[in-house]
Structures are given as structure tokens and as C-alpha cells.
Image (cartoon, rainbow, N blue to C red; front, side, top):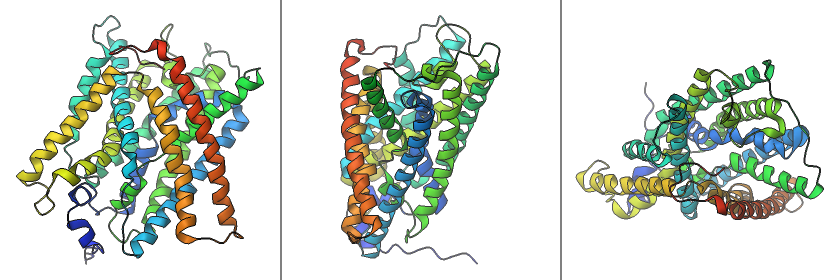
Length: 434
């Protein structure tokens, strides 16, 4: 016998006027759908930078930081889910981080930029003397994103995000296989795992590497993902987090270890570039690397869609009429126009500013680290008010203090890199500033 549909305990909150919440964040999902969304939000092509992050830490500290930051973010997201569940039981379902709009815009631009770069990499391998520029590939990606952006709700992405989960496993293991092949070949690159001899440079590199790993684990849309779950959400988010972190640790460790093992302190900020150098032969079969690039490209489309949901929710709160259907002419036409304009703007910015990664680093340091490592602990201590004599209180306080320092150092290092790279910036450049 089919189970009766779960009743929304907050119908007045959803249906009075907030079309953005009702349409974009419709609450129909199961726990595994949350797992798909979380995996897409966290496990992305940024894992290909992990061997580069190990350059500033070495084997021991690299493993330690990857493990500690993974455990801390899981704990942080667990606390945030408990706070949101507590609010739900109290009769108020909090479903968004309004202040995230700027960070989400950066993710949207970055996803389109990196997807365009993936197309450019494949094109240059097939046609080394081709005339197409980076901004032309970005335009192609933008057109595809405009079409996909018309999927009406976060919940409607569940199948795409399941495919995203499969894709991230696919390109990770292709990359791991390519690294093992390169490391065992007779032309294996010389390995050097030594750190910078200068103490000050070593310390600065270590903080930069920690910021990179922290940003990779970052997820700024957890409330929106939890809002897609059919109420009551109790317990469902934790199951989704467990699914996500199983995939995360499997891919993160394998990517970091294999890439750093082969290239050591010569690891590129994108390990695929180390495997496909500008000069000399590729370190793995072209078909393997080409398939990995295709998988990365496809997952970037899913990532762009996931993070765009926050912007769509904000837009439709103002533009849509909740009393008319999601697919009514009154709501369909504004959705088509506004979402298309948003994606076109992101594509234009990606084409005009192909150094946006540096700017995103600054935004991430001052935005995502506070949201992911500081705010959940503050909200938990404020909501549940654990006694100062309890271990929970002191763990939360310690994390707040430590990651406040990490955020400050990450901001400093990101701004410093932005300044150092300023002379490389060129509008509508055909090369991405690394």
C-alpha cells in the first residue's frame, strides 16, 4: 500500500507570498536526493587541486589536514542540520542563506569558465592550430546552461545530480589510473617531495594549502538543500551527509595521494594539466584523459545548476505569483527571461574576466569559511545553549577561534595572489590565469 504524502507543517509560511521558496525549493525530496545534491555541491573538479595543496604541506600534514578538515566540515554540517531541525519543530523552517548571493554568483561564473576551459582543452588536442578562443567556448557552455536553467526547481535536479555523483567517481578514478600509469612508466617524472627551505615561505604555503582544502570541502547552500526534503526533515539530512562524505573521502584521498605521489612538489593546480603538459607528450593515453575532461565538463554543468538555485529562488520571490501554478503563463515567461539573463550575465563575466578564480578565492575566504566553519557552531551554541562545562561547548568554541584565524590568513593569501597576478590580467583573454 502506497504511503500517504507527508503533510507540510508550514503551509502558511510557504504559500502566503514566497513563490521562490514554494517553486524553487519545493519540499518533496528523500534523503538520498539530499545526498545527490550535497555530493554535487561538495565533490567537484576542485578535487583536482588536492595534489597541488599537498605541495605546501607534505605527506604527513597533508593527510592530517585533509582528515581534520573533512571531519570538522561534517561536524559543522551536522550541527547546522540539527539547528534547522530544531527550528522546524518550533514551527519555523529556515531555508536559505540570503547573504550567500555574492558567493553563489562567483560559483556560477567559475563553473561556466572552467567548463569553457575543458572544451578548449579538448579542441586544442583535436585541432592544435585551431582559431577558436576561450570566450567562444564559454558562449557555447552558456547556451547549454540557459536551456538547463529552465528546470523549475531544485528537486527537479535530483536525476542530474545522481549523474553528477557518477561523473565525479568516473573522472577521479580515470585520473588516479592515469597517475598510476605515469608513475610506473619508464618515463615517470622525477619525484621531489621536499618543502620550501625558507621557514616563512613554508608557513605561508601551508596556510594557503589549508585554505585550498577548506574551500574544497565548503558548501554554502546546505539550508537550501535541506529545504528540498519532504517534511519532517529529522534524520534525513544526516543520511544524505553520510552518503556525500563517503563519496568525498573516497575521491579526495585517492586524487590527493595519486597526484602528489607522481608529481610531488611539481604538481600543477589542476592535475590534468600535469598529465597533459603544454610541451612534451601526455603522461597517459589520450582517450583516458579526454574522457576525464568530458566527465569534468558535464559535472560542471550540474554544479552551475545547483548553485544557481539560490539566485533563482531570490528572483522568483519577487517575480512569480505563488497563487498561480509553477507552469502558468504568468510565471513561466518571467522565469524564462530572468534565468536566461542571469546565465548570460555569468557567461559574459566568465569570458571577460578569465582570472575570476583569484576573485573567487577572496570571496570564498571571507564568505564560505565563516559560513561553513564558524556560523554553524555559533548557531548551535545559541540555539541549544550547551553548558560551558560540556565538551561540545569547548569543541565548538575552539573551531570558531581556529577557523577565524584560517579565514584571516586565507583572505590575506588570496588578496596577495590577486595582486601578484594583476599584471597577467587581460579582458577576454584566451588563457585562464592560474
